[in-house]
Amino acid sequence: MKYLLFVKFNTGLMHNAVHEKLEHALESVEQLIENEDLDIKNENLLSISELKDSLNKNNDFCGYLSNGTWFHIQPQNVFEVVK
Image 1 (cartoon, one colour):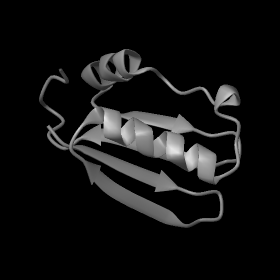
Image 2 (tube, rainbow, N blue to C red):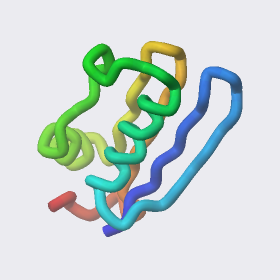
Image 3 (cartoon, one colour):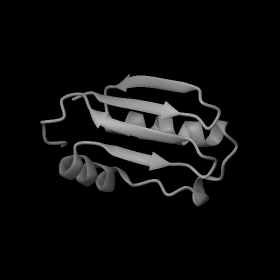
Image 4 (cartoon, rainbow, N blue to C red):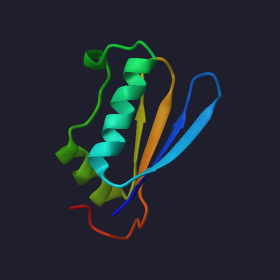
């Protein structure tokens, strides 16, 4: 299953990408946190298992960073169960 990652930066700039694995989407968010000079300890990121649970219950996940940037993760096929 592929995952869509959409990011809206606090500057208004937007970015999207397709990731082959959920872990890669989360790694991209972690890289974003590093690039934005944020402390990952202060950001409320879900673990992979928490993210999978959220995607299975809600079909998507929206996260917010402390600098106003937000991101959205959605399975490419929202009707499949995330494994």
